[in-house]
Image 1 (cartoon, helix red, strand yellow):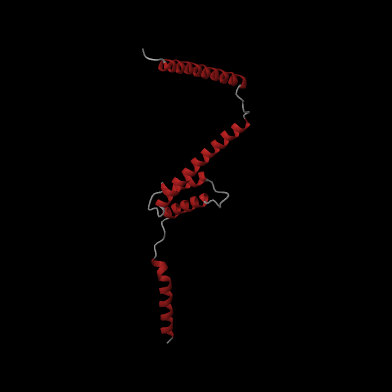
Image 2 (cartoon, helix red, strand yellow):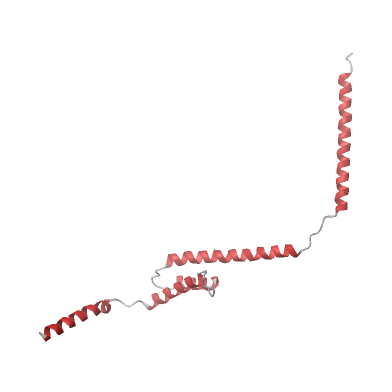
Length: 150
């Protein structure tokens, strides 16, 4: 009876640990690559105050350059593209902010009002002259039409 109990315990113990003995151990290269991917995801997380786009992109580049089977290759490519786009948008925004700040500090120059007024007076006089000529021509045409035919 004791032998039967010991045999049952030995077999049940062997079955419990048999699955872990049969499983393959993860490849260290895949583990390192996977670590790079999750490091990049952590750096790109907006809630992570210590993460940066540059660090995330560098980790994604290293992950995509890793040898072997990459489990998250498509996600990494998309994340890398989005991170690069975000980086470019940040540069454009910074440039725009700089230009807006420079425009606000630059004093506005009023156009020379005297010159502008003189130009307007000249234009008004030219238009008056054209109107007078057109009126003279109209009067001449009226006289010619009103004259009786011989």
